[in-house]
Image 1 (cartoon, rainbow, N blue to C red):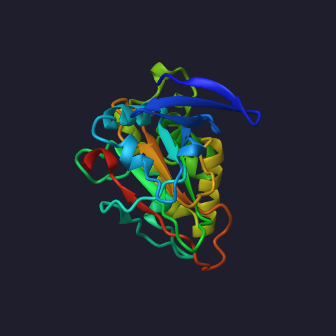
Image 2: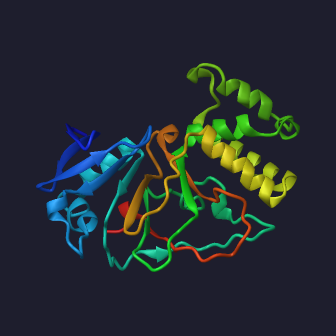
Length: 262
């Protein structure tokens, strides 16, 4: 992606031209970008994501940017696109939702969706639950390094961690990563109580340098969900940043598989 850098408010800002418009780009994290429409082009019904970035003649270029960056966050979007569906799944005090474990979206599909878009529509209730997003390789290594010693001794986990500590050429083949991750997830579900498991995954978030920024109203996050190089694919999960101690109302999210929905 070719960008031009400018300085504004002592922040490093880039600009990129897409669909005949210039968009402001910032990089607040080690991976991914945040994109916003220029202030003078904002309106109360702004939907530049669908009207410009996902327009037929721009779409492929924009999706390539999602693949390249891993994560593209679009701020201040208002959209009534009919293909969004509610993000479902509830967590309880005593049991984690499946969404609380790191995963690729559409993991049961023969071919995983290329991009998953998760967004927080404008609504009355704010959201205090984070969505953690990180590269698959970082997640898997963090899950191994963060395991309690009594769990790491199970099976081949310690030798697997040792492999990841060597050069990239000696890492386990990428086609085995889902199996390794599944084994770890099953073990922590079995060996740890719910809050200990949540605390474990918070440590994984930190070790993996996950993107866990708070949600804002009208924000969409487009996640590279099935890169042609598996080690550049991103994973995500619902992340409780503190112990789950109340049932306070939280804003809801919606999602769509953007690349597959024309």
